[in-house]
Amino acid sequence: MIFIFKIQNLISTKLNEKIKSNRIRLGLTQEELANKINVTRQIISKYELGTNVPDVFTLKLLANIFNLSVDELLDDNDNFKLLRKK
Image (cartoon, rainbow, N blue to C red; front, side, top):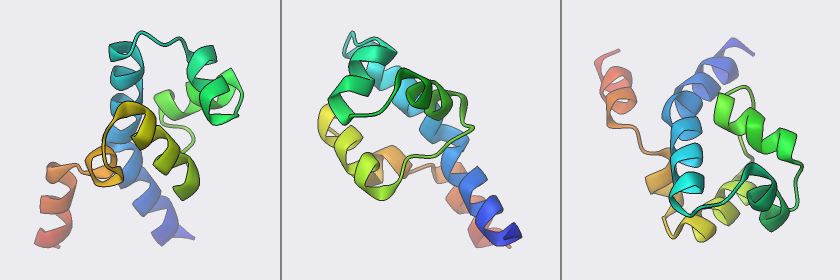
């Protein structure tokens, strides 16, 4: 359980910021983005706050909407550097 929690924290460190900045870049409200991926506005809010992390299917939908790859959404070079040092 602890391992999963740590990985989830690493993934959500920048993912939440990327979701929010790309949503704003496209001029979408949380409600509009939620409708595009068939979730509630509250779920989008939780993604942006970093309290929830999208599942793989949802990540693919978000990447498509944002015109990014899933790798680009998840990539956080600082976190990968930290993992390599350990």
